[in-house]
Length: 365
Image (cartoon, rainbow, N blue to C red; front, side):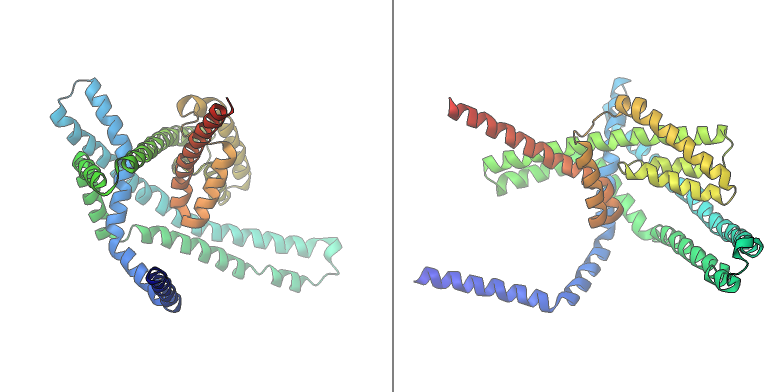
């Protein structure tokens, strides 16, 4: 009787808590947002440390091969990571943002010319003489179209600029990242001790195993994609330069950065590059699409399998589904990080199925 009464009290308390959260969801949402804004330097620093740990480990391995003293390896590797970060910031600040701003103006001018051409064509077309030309031209009113395009692209540019406007947050995140990378073994030791104390031995081994698989999967994914990004970015830049296509630098940077997004990224880079080039020459924009498609065929059939291969062991359909679901749930970070997460889940489920099949075979015997 007393046990049932306690269970009822627990259920009532849980129901009351859920009701409180539902009734105060707006305040809860505001509080969570405020907390996330306050924690943004820490979250960003942890994320950056997780990403840049991959190239740092490979730098340390290379330094070990050339017999650099162990006391200097970490410092040199951290300097290398810092150089990579600065190079990324410079590429965004000096190449992407100014080019986007320039493209906004050029797109406006191109649409002015295009709308003038359409209006003249409508007025001079014999089969449209009986049509209400004023209504047609009003429907494609150039000022409305141009203002919409400029507003859309201008907002996109301001959003990109706004990401990097909070200098304090970025500096704090970089400082935290460097400290984490410099003392990651101590942090790993502390986390291991904490898990040993809090979990049973069986659960500790399970958590450690899952952690090892997760780190290995993300390590392979990030390093493979980093090599892939440098190769495809360089190929796009060189090929566009050979064909004398404009915006070769920004298209190469976009191709490299967006290659981290499986399947969707290269297509997005191609379309964005074509839009930029369209402001200069529509014919060259079509040529750029053909050139990019040819590069993707070469890269997908010859370079990617040899350089990266099936680095995370996830089937193509699941990779695409993971990218789409991750993008819808968490935006750009979801597009990048949800794929290796699904690879970890796929690996664990696959192992579970194999063990279960082996158990069933033993039982049948």
